[in-house]
Every structure is written in structure tokens, then in C-alpha cells.
Image (cartoon, rainbow, N blue to C red; front, side):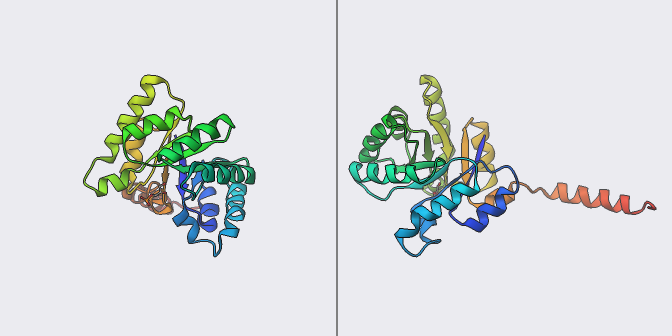
Length: 217
Ligand code: G3P
């Protein structure tokens, strides 16, 4: 299972990377807007992230028409070989993705909220499909059910598109995504750090160290 961090913050990425278990990064315009002052700095930020992590780095287009998306996608793909171009799952986004797939540009289709959208995402040849499960849960729907449905559909037809579970709100989302067979999950650093911990681990370690300290050295 690929573990991605959902952030554009260089410090957070550098720190988390030392764990050895971060496979890539996903960004979005909201994350990026917190890290740079002008759009001119966008490509440089993405390049820096790509140089830190040895894996896919999703960078999102902001055009809403297919031509604009394709232009941005080609420019982003040229920034670094780690770049995966993030594209919104709209009719224009699907059109752009079909063409970018033919050009060999890797894509991550974002803002997926239905299994029907995910079918077109796979048919367009996207590298990753990103259902937003936390936002669905927030509407009183079952985000993880969407993940299971997409997993079944992709398996039924042998689609190569990887399921990237996004909009994670708590560690159990990660566990459930793994149980559902998702190839990848992306999460904020707070959730990433929560995954390492369990109070019984801390208590157990405290006891072991206390007993060890009774020995003479
Ligand atoms: O990758 C998903 C992320 O970009 C947005 O998730 O947490 O804003 O719902 P969130």
C-alpha cells in the first residue's frame, strides 16, 4: 500500500520522509496557496517537493477547460519526473485525461464522489483515482462504501487505474482503505503521526525500560 502525505509544506515533508514509509505527496491549490505568495513560485515549490521524495508528487491544474488543463499538465510534467498531474473529475477533466494518457503523462483524477465518475476516470487511463471519503462522510454518506464500490468495479474489468483514497479524517479510514484493497492512501501529517502510536505500546515500553533499569550495569 502506498502512503502519501497530503501537504505542500516542505518542513512537514522533510520530517515525515525520515520515517522511511512515505511513498509520495499529494498537493492541491489550497495546500499550495499556504506555502507561496505568487503563482510564479508554483513550479519551483513542486520541484522542491519532488527532490525530497522519491515517488509520485501530485500537482493540480487550475484551468477548467480541457485545453487549459492539458497545457498546464504538460508544463507540470516537465518540471520533474515525479510529477503526477492532478485533474478535477469533470467532463473537461476526463477529456484532457484521455489525451494526456495518450501522451504518456501520468494523472491523478481528484474530487471523485461517485462510482460512475470513477468508471470514466479509469477508461480515460488515469494513473490514480482519488475518491474524497471524508467529505462524503461529512454529508452523512458512507465514503468507504464508495471506495469498496470502485475497488470492485476496477477489479471486475481489470482497470489499471490505482485507487488513491483521499480526504482522510482519522486512522481508521487508513485501515479500512487497506482492508478494501486500495493501492494508495493520502493523509494530512496529523493523521500520519497518529498511525504510529498506541497507548499500550507506550505503556509496555515504559514497563520494559523500568524493569531494565533495575539491573546493575
Ligand atoms: O487529497 C485530498 C485533499 O486534497 C482534500 O481533502 O481533507 O480537504 O477533504 P480534504
